[in-house]
Structures are given as structure tokens and as C-alpha cells.
Amino acid sequence: MPTTSTPATSSPATSPDATTDVTPATSSPPAEPTTSSPAVVAEPQPSPVDAAEPQPATSPSPASTAPTTSSPPPAGSSPPTRPRWWGPDPRPKVSGYGGPALRLSGLNGAFAAFVGLEGGINILQRLTIGASLQWLLNPVEAGPFARGAATRININYGGLVVDVAYVRGKRVAGTLGGLLGGGGGCVQNPENGRCADKTAFFVGEPRAGLRVVLAPIVRLHLALGYRFVAARTWTGPANLGGPVGTVMLEFGWF
Image 1 (cartoon, helix red, strand yellow):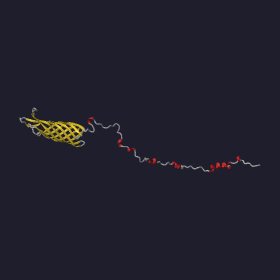
Image 2 (cartoon, one colour):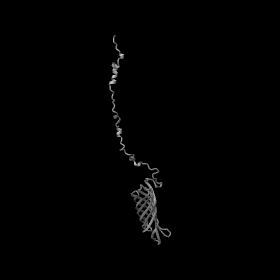
Image 3 (cartoon, helix red, strand yellow):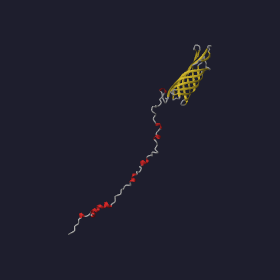
């Protein structure tokens, strides 16, 4: 009998197709991963941004960089306020002043004291322009009158006052100036005060002084000068001039 092949019962290992399918699975080793080892991947490299960041050890502390002037004032404190009568600050370019004045002088060879008032304006705290009036406190002896009765002399005067602060500090200033004006004199009877003779005269009183600011609204003015008088001819003393020392309190904005 003829021999027949039995392909259905043949072993899969001897089949060409089966051998082709199994060979890659049994003969090819597993593919190696293309990535690096886990140890190398786990260590991240520092980025340029992280490397540029300053280290905590070298960074300045907030306390050292904070400005000392920006600290807020303590609670409940307020800036000092000046009273309204203290005046504006800074001072205006033009301000007023005024006050009493005492003049110690000589008249006809005797001591004479004058009291008065003086006031005006200050310009830039350097130039003072004002006016002054002076009255004699103690009429002095004028000598025997032509009629033979004892007499005394009394004078009053006033005029324009100008002073310039040629040297000026914060509280002290040196001044040059004086008074220019006129007045009148009277030869009196000491018993009844009547004038036996009168005269009018021009007066010039140059002076050098020192001003001291005692407070922002009070100033002391000390001055030395001489009173020159030109009077018409009369029966009283011919010379009505003499040295003058002035003490004045000035009230204003200085």
C-alpha cells in the first residue's frame, strides 16, 4: 500500500512555520533600555536660575536694610504746634514792630531822661524804617532868666528813624542809623509851669546799636549816639544837644 504523509500530526517543532515563530522568542535576548541608570537620573543638575540665587548666609538681614527715618512716630505723639500769637514761620519779608524807649542824655550840662514810643516796619530783618516821639521826664535848670526869675528848660522831639543791620546773626545784630526830625523847647517858670519863651528846632541823632532777640516776638535794642540841635535864637540855652544812650524793647516778628 502506498505510504501517505500526515501533516496534521507532525510535531510543531519540525514545522517550518512554527520554527520561524518560536525562534525570535527563545533565541533573542531582551532588549536593553536606552535610558541611563536610575542613580544618574535621580540626581538633578542645578539649573542656572538656582545657581544665581544668593545663599541665605550672605543675604542681608531685613533689620540692617530698613531705613532708620521711616519708622512711624510713637502712638499718641504729635508734632509741636506754635501758638497763633507766635507769628508765621518762616517770617515774612515785611513785618512790623513797636515798643517803649528810654533815652538817657545830657542837657545844658545836666542829666536828662527821655521816655517815648518808637515803631515801624522791618524789611528782610535788615532795614528798619519807623518813627519816634520823645518827652523829657525831668526838666533841667536853665539858669537865671533875663527877667531875673529862676527858670528850667523842657524839650520834646521826634522824627523819622532808620536803622540798618550791617552785621546780622541768628539772635544778635549790629546796627547803624539814627533819627532825623524836629521838636520844640520851652523856658518854664517852675512855680506855675508857664513858658516865658519858646523855640522850635531841627534835630539829628545818629547812633550805633546792638539788637538782641530775646524771644521770637521780643527784641532788645541798645544804642549810643549824639543829639545835634539847630534852634533859632531865644532866651534859653543855646546848646540843646548832648550824648544819648537808648534802651528799647521792640515787640514784633523777628
